[in-house]
Length: 236
Image 1 (cartoon, rainbow, N blue to C red):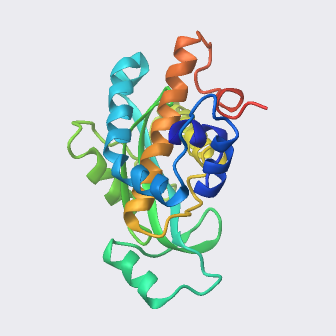
Image 2: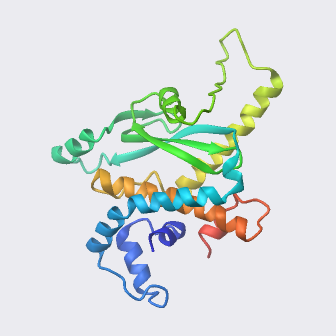
Image 3: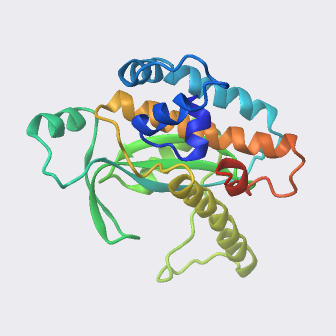
């Protein structure tokens, strides 16, 4: 229920439960919202294991080259002003204030660092404080994978990449930007409706798993471009 709901964009549990109540032919027994929420959190590790199992089925997940980038995951909205207890809960779980330069805004929460193959398969992720350094988070994410990190020099640095490799880097970055865009638009990963850290991680696991399952469905359907998820994930 959760994974299909994520793919349909039913991001809030009230919407998800309401939608399933009108589709009793698919799921005859729909729990009330609070029980559904508890079960979702309890099954978060199982959801992530489902993603890992699916990765083993995806030939494109065996690609040994990848790209890493991050996207913002707010924990709280600034309006209305959150209570001190709510702020304290998130702070205990590593949330912090940080700048999102691409959007020229400040958030309170995290960044989600992704490791994505050059075919668009999400291999792994790391949740880091919003004020953290992307390079450090990326290095930590890669620490156990045996992958060598290749960064693009700044324009004011003396040593630059060869033009051909620089062009490849641009293309690789477009792949991870495409995946980030899908997570933000099709699986609204930058909108947090959870009231606790456990709730947030449960939602993140279900969104990442839904993205991976959508790629696998495209594989089974013989889609030429497996990253074309819009019609598959969000049909009219």
